[in-house]
Amino acid sequence: MLRPGDKSIADVGGLHNFMNWNMPILTDSGGYQVYSLSKLRKISDDGVTFKSHLDGKEVFLSPEKSMDIQRNLNSDIVMAFDECTPFPATHSEASKSMKLSMDWALRCKKSFKNKNLLFGIVQGGIYEDLRSDSVRTLIDIGFDGYAIGGLAVGETQKQMFDVLEYTSQKLPSDNPRYLMGVGKPDDIIGAVSRGIDMFDCVLPTRSGRNGQAFTSIGSVNIRNSKYKNSERSLDENSNNPVCKEYSAGYIHHLFNAKEMLGGMLLSLHNIYFYQNMMKEIRKAIETNTFEQYSKKFLSDYKK
View 1 (cartoon, one colour):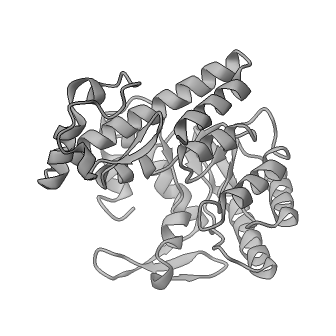
View 2 (spheres, helix red, strand yellow; view 1 turned 60 degrees about the horizontal axis):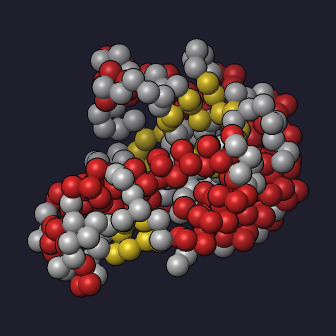
């Protein structure tokens, strides 16, 4: 939206051309990003006014504006504009936030003119009645897919799983169910077992940049001194290119030397780990062995 700007992206034919990426692209509406600027934003029924982190100028973002921007980006999946309910929030606060998001969802649907897909976002905090109201409203409006938002914002894993348990079963079974902003490998396993199909999260790359690698037996901190002279790979159970080509000791050295390559290699390693995990999950579902797979994965991962 701000840099390089959605119109600049439109001028080159959309994100697929800009990024040279011919696979599906999902774009968020800006709701969560505005949520993260809590000290720089003002929310009204019309939309959100926030200060640009680039030059401090005020910017107004509405449901209609969000749809216009995502139309210019030409993403395959467009997310409705919503307000991410903070945690903790009282029932009254969560209700007000959810109702605002539902009003915005309707406005998004009315202004949506893309040939691609539009997903609605379920809100309501950790309150079952509010989540149920949100689901009913979104189904009445009608979307191509349904996301569950407002999680992974400070609640416990049990609270998140409880919300998923009673929310996902109310969503249409023939539409994608998307859990936004999640998460750790054990979060994903637990969410899939509760009916979730799709995920997004910055964790693989953010963790990689900070020296954390995900492996089949748990996460490791490559900065730990025990890796200083290690000639072993990060994960001896993995066949990914980073594990095949580079030792843990070498990557440890890169981080100690503050070499950019260290974060790049761990980011690639983590993306491969997540992609492979999802591939295994799909295979387990197809072969009706997901329960056995999840038990073994979690047992190995938490060693």
